[in-house]
Image (cartoon, rainbow, N blue to C red; front, side, top):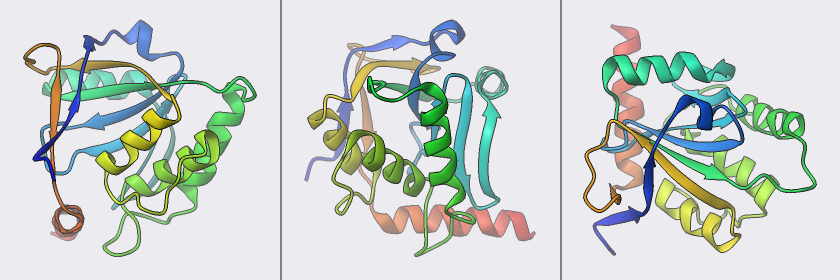
Length: 182
């Protein structure tokens, strides 16, 4: 197994570009694990230990990313011709709301994204446990377009996601849950 997963040809992100289309967002890209979100035409969807967050505002997230200098990757996904934007929003909304919250052994922030990609891009989801399991499946379906970044210092416009295990995800969920209870 490789020690990292490479994302080549990253371009600097601008709010104007990110407000349109569908993006898979890797927030805190250098952390193990990063936090994952989906953006559809400026609305964000994610699952955390606090619960499902649907129809959030991308400009507010971008402001936070800039203010806190959060290393972030935005992977633009192809919008299938037979889907309208509102249908995609409804699909990710339903996928996200299908889970009460991120919890150990139940669901991580990847779960609704995996379901969304299976539904929209027909990706095989049975062996998808981590983000670098999903990305090659999206590539196989030609679903990935341009990749953008904010606050990353890159070599050759390439970013390497450090490999991690499912237990690292569980540990991050456990630590986040502890923060909420203290």
